Image (cartoon, rainbow, N blue to C red):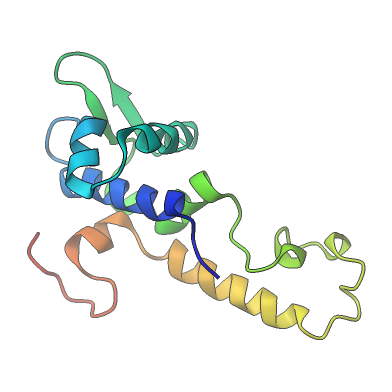
Length: 145
């Protein structure tokens, strides 16, 4: 199972915004250069991030993008759902209802897929941009950024 580049790039771009949260808005061109991501691809990604109200655009000469709410309030799960859609390893547990698959009532592996979905969601929904920016992912320690 792999995330698309869209999901990976969205998290990276949002992390740039989080790490520069106290600064002026950042132009997509600058994020593109910092992260070596096509500016055109970032434009597509930011359409989804704006729709999800994760970022806001600022017009003008010193315009660009900034987080729509504090980095402590935006999770990796929020970002990935905005650009990728629901998080699920297989179609039959995508929405959580048994009607998505005619075999749900007899499927032996469905519980495995549900547990995997729930574990992935738990990690993504408890990891904030602030955690990533401070380097607190696994150690609980903070690093200089």
